[in-house]
Image 1: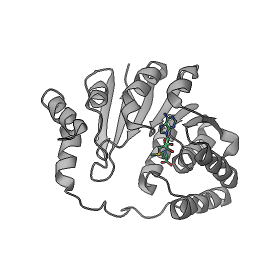
Image 2 (image 1 turned 135 degrees about the vertical axis):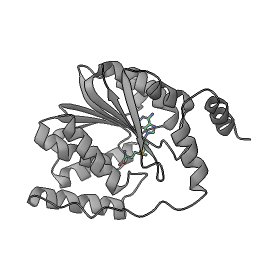
Image 3 (image 1 turned 180 degrees about the horizontal axis):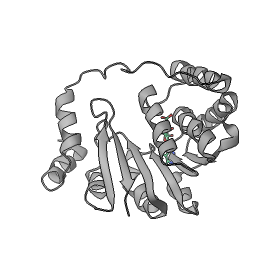
Length: 227
Ligand SMILES: C[S@@+](CC[C@H](N)C(=O)[O-])C[C@H]1O[C@@H](n2cnc3c(N)ncnc32)[C@H](O)[C@@H]1O
């Protein structure tokens, strides 16, 4: 049995991780279903252009990006948290960052996004420019484990989507900086298997309320800091 599977099963005996394990069991190799909501409607020419860029990234520059629906949820959550400071771990080609930045246009916030791959970071930077959101985003190129400690001040919104084994480290580094009422969102809570220690960290502390979404797809955890 591969180590990661053993680790998950051992942890399942003591941890409240029913949602991820059920999703793993039920998925049974099925393809994720297609997007199930109607397409987003642009309110102005700025959004129309940004949506075209987002569609182009998905079609031509896809690298492990979130789905369109999950991108839209990121925008909604960043907006609801009235985000002034957003952090993203794992930029890839910039798809999720553009969705987050679309919320920051209204909230007056900024996003710092971390990417270890220089080429993907350059692609993301070009995409931010053509989507018109480059003025709202700072890209930090390098290993986020080294750089995330340099984040200063209160954070309203985190999207964790870099190396999956690093989720717990990122949470421990950023959760103390998250303001009460802020959200810490993590992708890949169903596929690939989540780190049980991370799942435990976000589900066993009463100061944080976590709900799992879209577990029939990659799985997203939304963790709300309550105190
Ligand atoms: C799943 S992709 C991110 C997708 C992106 N959030 C989106 O939806 O458009 C993960 C990215 O994290 C980057 N990554 C992996 N380990 C990293 C690390 N230690 N520091 C910074 N970035 C890392 C990878 O190079 C990859 O581009």
